[in-house]
Length: 76
Image (cartoon, rainbow, N blue to C red):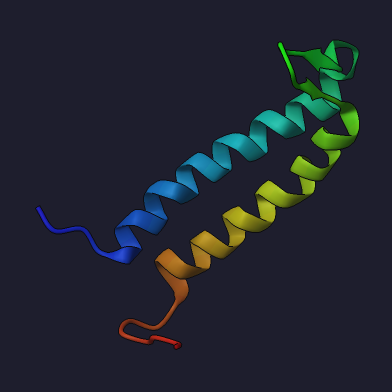
């Protein structure tokens, strides 16, 4: 099976959308659950705010790459 960069971008866009929705939900309704303390890592509300901005930008870029970019265009 041969997969192109467009197919990979479509797959990653799905992951980025899922992350976008999750962090948006956590920012709106889950603020009382933060911070999350893992063994050596603490996920704070500031980090979630950054993720709420960054993941939709990644999603938009991947959507453009997968569906809207002209076929066969490559930039070095």
